[in-house]
Length: 348
Image 1 (tube, rainbow, N blue to C red):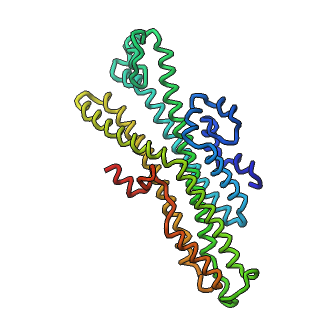
Image 2 (image 1 turned 135 degrees about the vertical axis):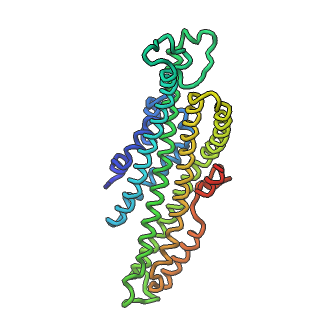
Image 3 (image 1 turned 90 degrees about the vertical axis):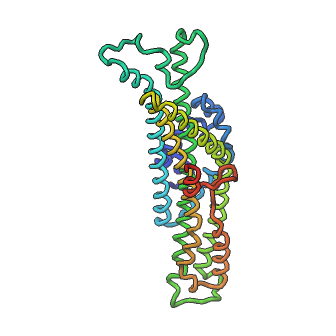
């Protein structure tokens, strides 16, 4: 990755780039091209601020180009690949859930009837649709256009969800990778200075001071990056959290009401509930990642040989420690911090 184009077009961001392109959210395409790519999903791009999204991706590019050692590249590549594996798992999970949701009516109808004697006419028109809709008296006459609309809505929803959540996972993992790089550098501060230690060394000759100053500048940019992630998703997560809580309650009521009717009326709601549960868990889990990694520089300074650094270097270390006491966080509408503890509270 030697230039900006290599960073965006690399295999590490293939899954993210694919779904953002399909959904019309890839900021490096022209507006006309974004409209062409999956027009039905383009409206959703306005829920994410395109300038802020481009700012985040530009910061990612600059971070990749600023890596100085192989160790830093290995650390960031490890976190990037982890984010890509998570995106791939989530994409497969969402597509599988969408396919099961679309096939559920037909499969349950075939299972509920005699498979050998079932005919096309024995399967009602309404049972061929993934969810119940009302289109008036001519429902049977226009069943195929209605079915296409139903299935397209399910596919569009899954693609949009994968694009937005995949972006969230990638941004969080990049931030965690940069925190790891800063922590690794700070932890090695002063290790080789036992013999040549000078508490009043000159700035120009003080390697520890230069490394700490570089880490401080990186840390400031990284905090701004985390704030951009927060501003991008805080409103979306507030809406998602409320809808998930309401939806889970309604699904629970629906399951209780259909306990006496058989598996056909229970499997569908339970599938949706499991999908909502995993979807919500991944949001809070990645928020916990950011909370944990954002305090890593503080822990690294505590483990470092800071007592073998100059007084000026120690002042920079104290400044970083003061800032890292407050962890970076992702919230839902500035009301709830996304963490594992709060996830347990929401799902009790």
